[in-house]
Image (cartoon, rainbow, N blue to C red; front, side):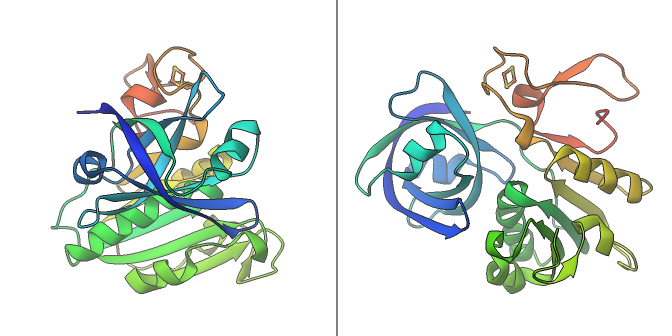
Length: 250
Ligand code: FES
């Protein structure tokens, strides 16, 4: 169950071009959150909260790590927070990834700022003994983050749009000859998710549409997406952000 809490900023660091890692302390969120969920943060000077997915949890220390891009006034203010400041958050919000220890091998396919929730998921899966293969797409070599962290949990393929590091192209371009796996998990821009679900359509998969979140609380309808065969619509913020790959139409 989500709660409104105050989270103390422990650190803020620019870890890649325009990409910030912030670690926040709150024992409740660190205990309650599961991979795929997000925090709904109130940035100083703004009235609307900003949904940002959880990239890591250290339950022993009671800390939660988020990654965000410096793209507007809200994220600029967030990036300028100092250690010791408090940030108001509602969380853990949304429905996370569904997985279990019976899986042998899974694929993580992520693009850009859709990658952070896949790290938290991959770390949890490794603890269950699940083999993890990661396919991560970034704009350029300067935008790459968490490469070593992903390599620690399994085989990792890095792709850049311009070929400045790793393979050239998109994460989906290296999804050939992937061998056997039980399930794929994907998060990133909609065109990438369309490509992933087309390419891996015959496999069982889950997608997170967290990049499409607006207000995060069901008020703006910016996140509404048509449902698949069942018809109707889904709200990404309250029904997701994680869905079975065939549950929504991208
Ligand atoms: Fe506003 Fe879902 S993000 S209604």
